[in-house]
Amino acid sequence: MSDLRIKPFDFQAVVARAGLRPDGMPATGGAQGAPGVQGGFKAAMSTALQDVSRSQMEASRLQREVTLGNPEVSLEETMVAMQKAQIGFQATLQVRNRLVQAYSEIMNMQV
Image (cartoon, rainbow, N blue to C red):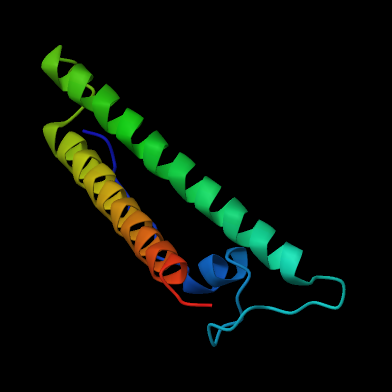
């Protein structure tokens, strides 16, 4: 049986990667303006989508290995990987829904 370890959530690293200060406000660097913040959001979204895709591929691989009867892959490890992939997908779906909702509200504003 393999040793499965879950890493603790590092909030500070996620906040910094998103280009925010710890209080949730956009980080303002001396040379970094609005384009840097936008690039930070784009990079964070791209990384998040790649991570979700990677976790889904890993879950599929583990499912295939369990189905083929590989003794080195445990059912528990496979189920945890499947749940992680599902949670990541649901979170991505919610972010997409919020972005579409915000876009719709902006487009419906009267100028």
